[in-house]
Length: 269
Image (tube, rainbow, N blue to C red):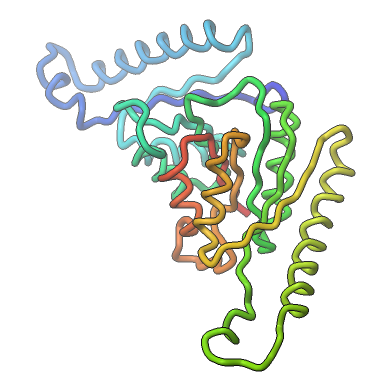
């Protein structure tokens, strides 16, 4: 992705200082010398991995000892990164949803985070973008389009909604609101199709589709669509329409990271 976009690639590996405390105390040289030797060894292993996996693509290597999350966040700031790419699974290997560390990175990162599952495809069938018409929506659509172009996939923009007129059904009501609901859905489709048109015009050759989902619980409706086999990558805003400053991730985003087994890009405004 870095070479495709013309960006520089930085590879980070952080060793938790707690994990090496006893080893460092047992060696016959200073902690400073131990740390420097360990970082050089890590860089050597990183270089071997880069050479074997990236086919000649250059990368800047970062080996650090300390708190892993703090190290990642500091490196993002130091290099002015645009995107953090991290494996969805931890040292324990594949499981249900993202690991605790990966989720923490998604919560705390000031930039977009791509959590990559082992199923990350060389070519994908479809990229699904979750559109809620918040201030994130255009950015989500644009980031999803970029990934779709990169992977050769089609782009599907979805919006989940409920019937706002259901309140009239809680008790007896002589009012027929079917026409109003139909107009409401037409309005949502129109907003969604405006984004489809804009993205399609910006990316010639990209197939862009839209789907309007119904669900009393938006999150369940979105997750049900994400889990269908035609979806390989999901893109969602880091925060939803509430956009409360004290919320690190929106509730739908949290559940998607926890409950899906595909790669997910969380988008910051």
